[in-house]
Length: 242
Picture 1 (cartoon, rainbow, N blue to C red):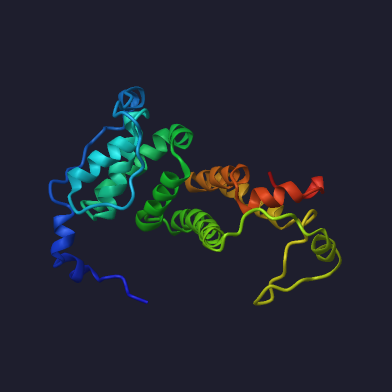
Picture 2 (cartoon, helix red, strand yellow; picture 1 turned 180 degrees about the vertical axis):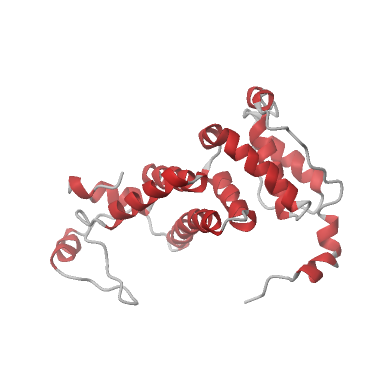
């Protein structure tokens, strides 16, 4: 596996400096009302894919992606870009943290899962508190695990075949191993996801990143994911997790 570059290697990287050319950090003094009410008018929204070296061109593309949304959502994305390009990363994270502390409900209402995960990656990379970094990383782990198996389903042409009722019956009667001592869920009655939900709810009471983890987990119940597909097969009310 290719290792992450050290600080000195990054410092002498011409590409790193080129990707930050023309960067500046806006200061909002903790007031976001104007940014919340101003709506970006950029025509049809087009999602970006990847990023070029030219920062201003990347910001232009990002602004188009957020057409029809409040300016605050674009400012949020710009801070993430600056942190990823390591431009005044500590100062950018401080602005980013203030934004989340002041406008968490607004951000969660308007950000899609892609940008929520990007936000939690930033907390995982830059938050000084290890407990916040750990919870933020768990958001990425959950979503990226789902992205991985959904991508596998796509490349293997795995659609939505009928449920094998014989296998569901077997899972209710015996332990079916997977690997490393793990076993399949007892589909329909298992309490694993309910217990995980309870742990997530406790984290949500204690921290901002826990609140985001809870929101992401709940959103994944309503998308076409393994969570929602298991939900459709679940019939024991006291072990439901949604």
